[in-house]
Length: 140
Image 1 (cartoon, helix red, strand yellow):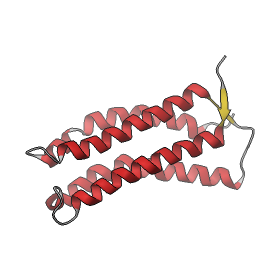
Image 2: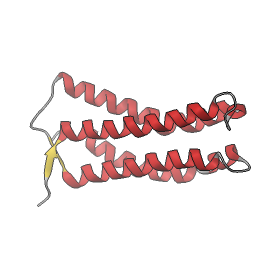
Image 3: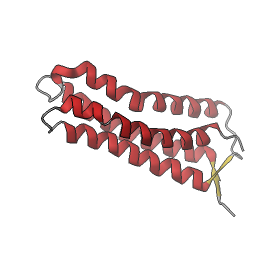
Image 4: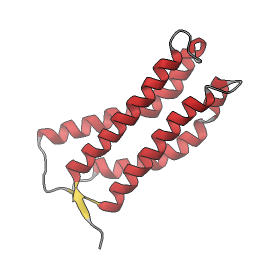
């Protein structure tokens, strides 16, 4: 039998992971697009690559947590496996984003290489999206 975990607590933990690692990724981007940064001349392209990777998910998660905070269902639970999948896939995804930003900054064609990573990032993101949808859409 699968263990059930408190939904609100799990959602808040996931939001924390996304806030911390997403914030770290944002700090890397800001540093890299600043004057003198490796992506300074390609600021718009890098932001076009980065913003859709973190911001929409983070804002939806914040919205869900705020909505639940208005009328929390303390009895709601989520499957433990679903939570752990969402947590670890989120960590892997956000680390891949950060590593891509750092690694491609050292290449000969950083913007092209960063854009080339979009397929891998999108593939991982699709798995993350499925598990986060299960986490933030559940009402059991």
